[in-house]
Image (cartoon, rainbow over all chains, first blue to last red; front, side):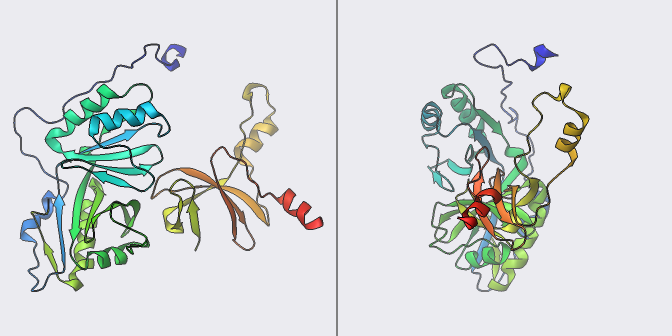
Amino acid sequence: MSEVLEPTKNEEALIAVMDQNPVQPMPTESPMHHLKLGARSQGSNVPTVYAGELGLKGHLVIRGDADNSDFRKGVEVALGLGLTDTLQSAESDSLSISWLAPDEWLVICPLDEAFAVETALRNSLKGHYSVVNVSGGQTVVRLTGANAVNVLKKSSPYDFHETHFPVGKVVTTLFGKTQAVIRRKDKETWDLVIRRSFADYAWRWLEDAASEYGFQVADNLA
Amino acid sequence: MFYIYCPYCKEHREEEEFHAKGQAHIERPADPDSCTDKEWGEYLYFRKNPRGLHHEMWVHAVGCRKFFNVTRDTQTYEIKEVYKMGERPTITAQNQTAAKQA
């Protein structure tokens, strides 16, 4: 028993790292697949809120010590984006990184790049850190339009005013009766990271909350 | 409703985002094999229920998911202080009464 509990003597623990994307293309379904979003458009005359799912993205959770300069540097080398400060996010052409907790960040990238990003992180990081592919566990809903902020105000006790929630800020808070990681991408565009098992509920909540402003499903928001 | 300052997110959030986790600073007996049943029983089951200042743990469950400590007055519900895990409170019942007498 004591042998099992003893920390590994090797400098690097052996971790099974695998590309979770099948080599052969296979039918894949996002967490909101069953909602058939394309057919749900309410066809409002003057839509002021648009939303759509950015499904099938690569989601990686990085954990490590933010005060460790090697860790910070390693992430920056691998991603081209550094670790962000409390409640801040950053994005490049294909990647975004969001602060989740003092020792935890979420990286979102295209699904077919997730394995390459994970490998790059593992190659440039050493010591006590963790990278976990959580792509299957969550999805992204992009909410945009002039009244998008009002939909959020209805859905959460958080203060979404521009002075309190500037572009680039990311907050994990309540959304309806569930939770979401809400990131302000630009003035009128918000990305919500929703847990897979709550995707159905969250979408139906969103649709209901947005209906009074004129709502339209948008399938090419990326 | 409480409006609680999370020392990790560094801002105030609604109480809905948090869970109370009971009394803070409970120390596990250093050597469980040789402590008395009374000590072990008190460690496991017996909690304070003070009228006045109370140190309790909270977790930012819908947020950064970190635990932290809150010093709260159980009579007025006023939160006196919030401090991170591993830190000691600066406001305690002892130093409050000492300050009153001084």
